[in-house]
Image (cartoon, rainbow, N blue to C red; front, side, top):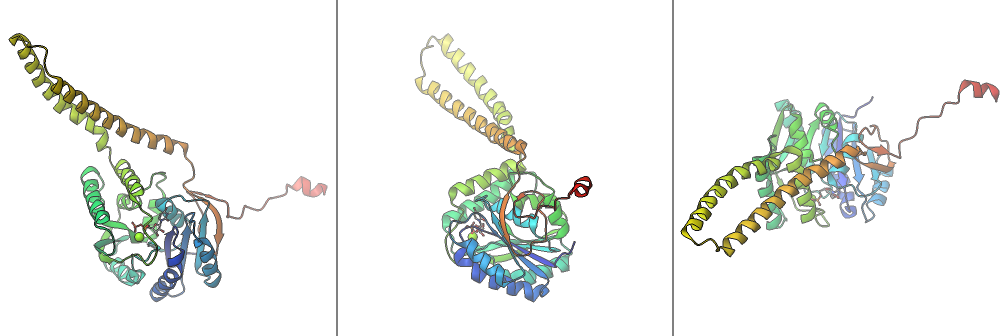
Amino acid sequence: MYRPALSVVIPCYNEAACLELLHARVAAAARAAVGDDHEIVLINDGSRDDSWAVMQRLSAADPRLVAINLSRNHGHQLALTAGLDLCSGEQILIIDADLQDPPELLADMRATMAAQQADVVYAVRRKREGETIFKKATAAAFYRVLDRVTDTPIPLDTGDFRLMSRRALDALLSLPEQARFIRGMVAWVGFRQVPFPYDRAERHAGETNYPLGKMVRLAFDAVTGFSTAPLRFASHASVILAGASLLLLFYILWGFFEGSPVQGWTSTMLVVTVLSAAQMFVLGMIGEYLGRLYIESKRRPLYLVADIAGPVKGHSTLGFNAAEPSPEFEVPAERKAAE
Ligand code: UDP
Ligand code: MG
């Protein structure tokens, strides 16, 4: 199979206002790095604006641009999975559509990859322009909590912006799970991975597609995908509670023999509310893992492709591709003879 030297993979959701400039800057950076031997893979993740129309127009003008239209919104991580699955380059650059990650860093990232003989060069955010204090604070807290609970060391303050080698990508694509926290999964596959510090720019246009709800979901996917620590919470808490209940027992018996057994609305309520909250927490955690187990057990395709514009070279292994030409129907020999 023919592989271009570079694939740039870009998931897009409601990014019509960014696409033109995005394409120009990415194409210029790719051309500067590898000449014409590249492909740009745009994934339309069920946008509600006219992103798909713009993509089709761009792909008609640039033979190196492949536009993939998913059947509906699948979410950032699955849209990215679709692009990674269908791209075919020797090196793969993952980048956001909103130009927060400057495509011009490609040259330096390739140089770092070559100099350090790395399989993954992941971009670490030094500064984040134009994002709310809330977003920066929650993101910073999230990466630090994640680092404490997971067994896989996942780099801090790192998004999906990164350059990967083909063998690292193939390793990543061998992981079949539905709940995908890609930056963690890349860390998990290993090989040689090196950081690349950069300053994150402001969004070119539009606004964030990661409101609080989606961030929380990603955080749950990250924690449950890489750690079973929350499941151990119950056993750890039970040790502490056993100690506390022993003390309480002595206190109650002491009160009984002192002759004042009926007392303690406050303490009773305290015990009841604290313990039921703790039980609910543990139940919720078990539910999170159980729900994920259920979803994984259905083994549904990770993404559904409706249309493709441009010369896609890869084959989908993780998704369902309605745009792929079906293999030619072979007429059986006996029927041919009869006709
Ligand atoms: N994105 C996507 N599907 C979604 C949400 C986001 O493909 O459901 C894409 C989006 O177009 C962008 C990237 O994921 O290229 C990151 O999203 P965004 O810039 O909104 O997140 P932020 O940078 O604010 O964390
Ligand atoms: Mg962004």
